[in-house]
Every structure is written in structure tokens, then in C-alpha cells.
Image (cartoon, rainbow over all chains, first blue to last red; front, side):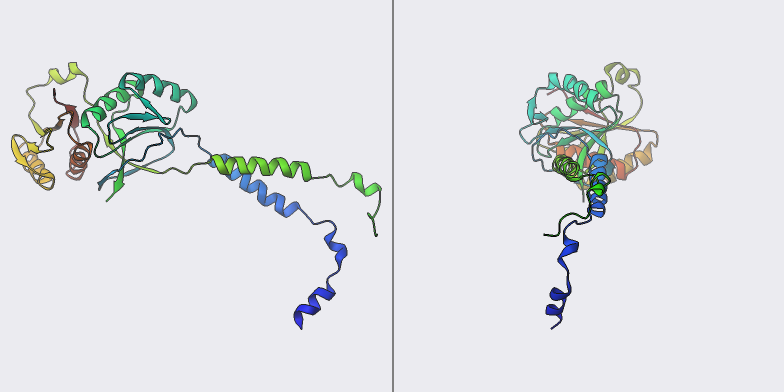
Length: 138
Length: 135
């Protein structure tokens, strides 16, 4: 049989040193890929239900995420933040990430008052004239 | 045993194993920490500063009010989310220069506000402001 033939013909001397160079190449390429694409975003850590709309725009690269959950609590970096602290926290995060986009993840059942106050603070802090609010394509 | 081919060849071939260890650890670190978050977003305009709002009060504007009970009124006329765009376009046809003001009660749903802003994008309204009413 063919299988038997292969086993008998293979010599064990070539197994002694395997050529690692091609694997190293692949590993380095993977490493460089992950280094380049790595973005260290501090996620708010709450699940929100997004509003479904027609007009969406992909935000890239992301920088700062601020979430408002359905209880209208504001979350930054897995912590509840009061409205007064938000400006300070944004300035803090901006030091690490000066270029990334700021996105507000607002739950569709949260209070609009909290969102609008937050938009006002972000506008004062970041100078955005239109603050991106996370939505879903309908 | 067969043994290594020659002693002097050892100097030429560098032992790659420690470097491979380091590279693998780095690789695993970056795989674990990398996050691929994608966000689709809609731009919402913040309220204008107080002084600016008072400077042009006479300009005609379309006012969409969302109450505490999420009822939508466009310039005083009660409507629902599907009727917002038609109302908006009718009022703009009467006065093409008019700006749009979305006024929300602090306890209104965020989803309603985002939907109205989306309808305004559909209707190609350019000057939009989102403000909140005094509770």
C-alpha cells in the first residue's frame, strides 16, 4: 500500500533540525498585524439597545466611548460617572488618545435630558458640533 | 547515535528558541488585548450656547416638541414618528430658510429624539438644534 511505502521511505535524519524560518516569518507578520491594529479603548462595559435609523456613519478610529444605560446612568471605563465628572474624565482620556473619535452609546430607553446635557458637556470639552451617537442600521 | 555534524558549525547557527518564546508571548498579548469595536453613529447637535439662542429669536423655525409621554408635536400639531418627516417638509416648503429645533422633555426617550434627528437627515434639514425644555 501507498501508506506503508511512505513510512518506510522517510528517513529520520531530516527530523533532527526543523527549519523554523518560515514559521518565524508568519509569526512576525501576525505580531506586526496585531501591534498595528491594537487600539486600547476603555469600554464602558454596559450593554445598550441602540436605536435603528437610516443614516449611519462608521466611526474610525474610535477613541473614547461614553455610555448611557437604560437607567440613565453614565458609564465611562466600567464606572458610573456623574454629569459633573464627565468633562474631567474626557480630558483625562484625551491625554492617552488625542485623535480617536468620541462616541456616545445611548440606550434608546434612557432619558433624553441626560443625553442632551452630555452633548452640551462634550461640545464644551471637545468642540464637536455634531456628537456621534451610536445607532444601528435599519 | 549520529550526533551533530560538526562543532564549528554551531557558531554560525544562532539558537532561535528564546527569541521565539518572547515573540509568541508578545503575539498572544496583542491577540488577547486587541479589540475590534466597530461603531455606526449618527451625529446629534448639542444645544447652542445661551447667548446665541437669544440673538435671533425672530427667525422662523420648525419646533418639534417631544413631551414626557413621548408624544411628538410639530409646531403645535400632534403627530407620530412616521408623520414627522411629512410635517417637516411641508413647513419647510412654506419657509425654506427655517431652522429645525428639536425640544425634548428631560424624561423623554432618547430613542425618539434620535429617530426624529434621523428623519431630519432624511429630509435634508441642515440647521438643526436639540435642546431640552425646562422640566
